[in-house]
Structure formats: C-alpha cells, structure tokens
Length: 422
Image (tube, rainbow, N blue to C red):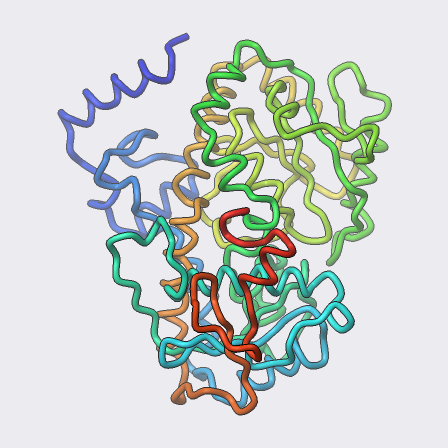
C-alpha cells in the first residue's frame, strides 16, 4: 500500500496539470456533490482551497431563514434571554456593542447554574475570541470586524420544543424535526472542554506515525458513560442498549460502560481500526474528537443535527449503522464490510481526518462564528445598545479589568477552561 506521502505526491502532480479548485465551483454544486458522497476535483485539496469552509455556511442560511421575513425584534431577543437564562439555569444572554462584550443576564454562579456555570465561562472564552477581543494565534495579521449583535445561548444538550421559535444559539437539534425550536447551530463548548485542538488535531503527524493502519487491531472499541437519550428516541437508542448488546459479542466488539476499571486512554482507542461513536443526551463531542484520529469512526445513524452535518457523508467520512430503532445488529454487517474492504476503510478514516482538519479546527470555528454573527446582525430590526444592568465581560488578555467585571481569565485559570488549556 502506498504511503500517505506517495499519495500526496501523485495528487500534487495531478493538481499541477489541472488547476480546477473547489472554489471555482458554485456553492450549490459543491453541496450537491458533498451530499451525494462525491468529491469535486478529487479528495485531495489544492493550496488555494484548503482554508475555504464556505460550504458550512448553508447551515447558517437554513437556521436564519425563519427570521428573514419577520425579522428579529428587541422583544424577541428579550424573551429568548428570559426563556433560556432567567427562567432556566442552562443559558445566558450577551451583547457585543461598541467593541465591548456584555453579559445581559444574571451573573453565573454554581448555586443557580450548577455545572453549567463552567460551561457558560467556556462560552465566554469562545465569544471573546470570536469577536476579536482575545489575541489568537489564528488571527495574527488579520483585522477582526464583528458588527454589534446580541443573542441568547443555551448550554443544554438538547432544547425541547419552543412554539414561539425564539432565536437561540445551540450546538445540536433534532435531525427529524429541526424547526421545533428557534435553534441556531454553532460549534459548541465540547472542543474546549475536551481540549480537542490540543490533544487531537495538533498531533496528526504523531498519531499517523505511532499508530499506522497496518498495526491496528480489528476489534470495535468504545467506552461510554451511561447517559440517557433525550428527544423522541430516548427509549430506543440509549447507550446502555448497545453496551448490553455488545456483552455477548466480545470476539469482535470491545464496548463497555465507562468506569475507573474499564476506562481507556485516547491513545488506546487508536490501537484499533474501528472506533465506536454513540451520542449522549444529545450530540456528543466525542464524534469531533474521534474523527480527528487515524481510525475510522463507526457511528450510530445520526439523530441530531450539528453545524457541520450537511457536508458530513456516511461511507465517505465515517461508517454508519443502527439505521432504525430496533436492535443494533447491523453493526455486524458494517464491520464485515469494513474488514473485506480494508483499503477503502482506511481511505474513509483519512477522509474523516481531512474533514476534521479543514472544517472543525479552531480557525474554522472562529470563521463560522464570525460569519454567523455578521448574518444574524443584519436580521435585527433594532439598534443594539448596552442593555440596562449589563455586566462587562473582561476577556483574557484585557488588562483593564474592573472588580465588578466578569473576570473570564481569572475564572478560567482556576477551572482549566482558558484557551491555552483547550
């Protein structure tokens, strides 16, 4: 089998002879090709298009479509803050105005927000970076311009039906009924919480060298906390169902409930060709983490929509099973196919890595946030001003913090969520 470097050399020769790039095709055409599991101009990318993530932006257009005719009023924004941050402990409202970031709802506390207080501070870090108030390596040499904007953000794993369709940032929604709330998808806290950039994406060359495909075990591997499933599939697709199913199939499946005894490291997963993914209450960020490894992700059929779902394709970027709500026995056929098509399975693993390194990295996520904020701001039918009683959010690197500010850097250092740790 040719090495990755040999493949790159061949593709570079082809690209030199044919300078057609993904950017030269329309967005609609590229999305069509992605959804059909095809590629435009080959799997490998030329230098010209490696940073082009515009195919992701169709999700922004879809999420904002309900607000294009009725627009977003100040009353809608205030109702969203009330629903997700005042009457609920899993969220907050923020305003970015005059190049200052403000918390528009109550100050997060462990007493009111529980462990969601920590998630809220993670999001403070993310928004600080997205609006350009933190010095990022990814932004060197660039001028960041984000318009005045204000929104609600939900930290909940799954947002239930909202008949008013109030606009709110969330990281996943029901794939079968995405319009049951006013959810506007965004990257979410999991990248920072699991330090995916630092622990996975930054180590691709090391992983490929230390865990070559030819040395990997062919058992399906997975460890999972026994979270319940939210939404319409709560009784039929919980993680425990698959763990129980795997108990009598130990010859080719090593999947257990996570505990101190059964737990294995990130690197232990990469000793296996096939890494299982099961979502939790909602979408689990383990998927983004596993996709960046050099094994193939074998995932249950997606029930939740994320900001990158539209261009993620089964049998191109990952393998999929559990096509209905019955027993997940089709995993046996999927594993059989993978073993009989080893070269193609290895290619799918590499495609998944390529996808993660193009669309899911911090640089890509910052671009997505900025595009989202810019398009959302155009739909506001009012001028954004500092809300009455708002608390200034002092972002990491700001040395003019006041005692009554939200001190993001101080909290982050104490709770290990600062960008340098993530």
